Length: 536
Ligand code: GLC
Image 1 (cartoon, rainbow, N blue to C red):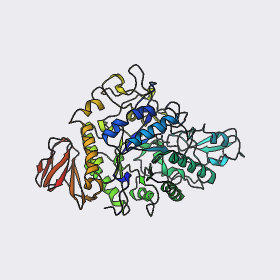
Image 2 (tube, protein in one colour):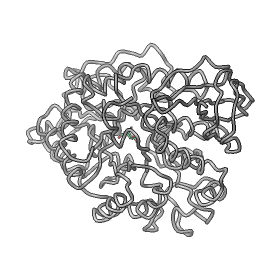
Image 3 (spheres, rainbow, N blue to C red):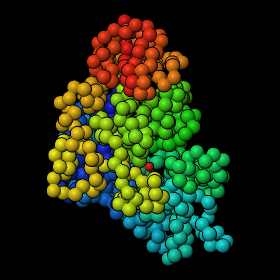
Image 4 (spheres, protein in one colour):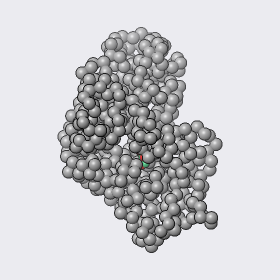
């Protein structure tokens, strides 16, 4: 149990909004800030405590806003700063906190800083980015690869040097070892905090600090990650990210956040497969990133063994008193309910797990109604990654939110073409229909969020392993002085029994009809069922 009062971000539920795809108020086919404001009543009804909005800053949109050309304004596509202020005020009125995306690793190549930096070798901003001479034969300085395919070095003919870009060549990497760059980026964080935001999601947090000697990366002996990451997965990323001085940087960033009243929070994007390395981002004295995102569930196969390993693995490495975080997906990952992930039948099981684990859950927009990926042919793709490396594109998980059964599902006006196609099942899978259906995944999500808020054991109770349990099932316990709960999940499409999970009463389950009923010591689960048992 916590020894000090819990912070809002420990007991709260975060909801990720990809602004292009959530709600379009202006009627141009792309979502915007006013659209989000118009849906805040829904989010309040759902019961989320905070929204994280992916980038809406001025941007050439080479990477749909993750190429920022001005960190302190709003792209006209999404509205104005006044729209942002209105959104922030309306969210706060409803008790919803607002987190914005902080993109420290790179800017757009159109950012005035980079325009200056590339203008000449002696420009005062030259060293704000990572420039390097060519090798003896004119080759790039080392073997580092872009996460978006190809070398991460781009030759600049005018000034006869390479610049580094971990993502697209339109996303040059900032040099955080330059104190002026760092001061300017910290000022940007202050600018948003002064405006009233409740914190940041930090984009690719570990990437900012690279090996100062620019040493090559060694090859990766395992080929396991190549399918997901392309050629980037062929190297061990020992030198192009996560240099140890990154920890000092995040300690300073934490100090900045903590100097503001109101429990401002940092949620860091951290894709580290090694549990121990991942846990280091909490900081030795838990003085770095407040909530290191944990993608271990996202990357696990949806099998009982893999899910158990991920949950117990994360719980097992958490530093004493540290608070976990959990996600099933986001704007870069196959949607959870998609057939090539867990599938629709398991969507409720996933949601019940997400909202009963110990730690901060983040729901990706649409997960609460069981939205699945929408296939987009490479030739029709919008995501540049798909065109550079077919199969890796992220359009499928970014399709417009399904609000109702009208044409365009209430996302935009009926006669407008949305920026990405809607799912073909939007007339059946949507918020309006599910809000009225007591058996829908939306109703289940809302009830789980409310139970989590009200039930002291679900809010703050400790995590305890349970089992082993029979093949295809996973169970764990949450306990505190207020009682204990056993969460039992069937990850298969067949009936399963879990000995010793009861006796008790079913507090909530994926299928509602058993809620409130008693179970004996041995608990039988129907196919694709999960339940929370309160010990009697
Ligand atoms: C993060 C974002 C992703 C973006 C990349 C580069 O991984 O989530 O969408 O493309 O950073 O900024």
